[in-house]
Image (cartoon, rainbow, N blue to C red; front, side):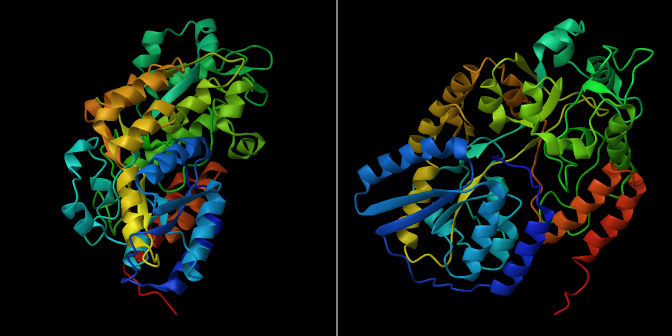
Length: 454
């Protein structure tokens, strides 16, 4: 969503945790609530920048005494600069926030709860897509954001390749999966895999050491949450990430259902149907799709316009497969904008946050066709705009309507969780036994039972 970007830089994230632990509530000035002035606003998604620049222009026309200054940074730089800003008392007044991050900010008093502002305004939480507002209730039960967009996960596939392989659109829309034999999902992945001699993955003589096209692409090991990598599989087995939907303290990566899922997924590499992790350094999934190296990728709805713009390749969109529980699953996330406690213009910052979450701004975002806004009344406009890419985005929206989505796991100690699980899962992808995730899970649980050392 979110975007919603995957969390890929464990080292940078762990370093940021040290900054957070050092800063506490550094620079807090709760009384600084000026209603006018310059509001510094940060976001990471370049594709969404033009839409929010238009929102800023419209907002300033209505509020001439408030100036919105927008800065955009790439994903990793964004969080590094933000954490440094918290330490140096130079954080932006408002910034696009992520479900995986805001819990720690809230716990350390670095962002402002907005319950009072929401109660005193005309905000109707029922206006938002189901499930998105709940994502922004922090570990203390207070609200730290209003949803600005939402996302789910689907399968982008090369239509020319599926047609050549005799795989129909109907088959792609009705894939099934289980961790034992992979169901029709694995059969399709195998059949779409082709070696340099033109032999398919399910045919005699297939050479997995010389693959021309992988049936399923790979972006990363998935780290702790596997948003687009494996979460849509694991959550159809009855498995859950932790003991609570949000802010849990006991994790379940030692659960046999999860380890069986991850072992199956990693096994696609062993069979030659999915590239090894090192292969991902040669280009992003969309680049590999365009180059014909991947027949399918699982990806988030926030990348729909990006995949639709790829030249020289004809892509279509299918829903995630039906799992052992008889249902599909897809992670649902939502971004929101947070107000820094150190801001000296909190009154103006709230006005901007409220506008970002309003139908006026989200209608602009919807028309841009880059991401799906969270205001329910804008979904039709967003769907029409995204449909211009040629994709049937019901693969995303149907899961929300049918109640088969699950929330992005909101956690505390996110930096440490990211570091531990990124390393553990990368190791499994590189050859370690999946049972090694049990030791990693023990480390996660210890984060909430052992007192940190000074």
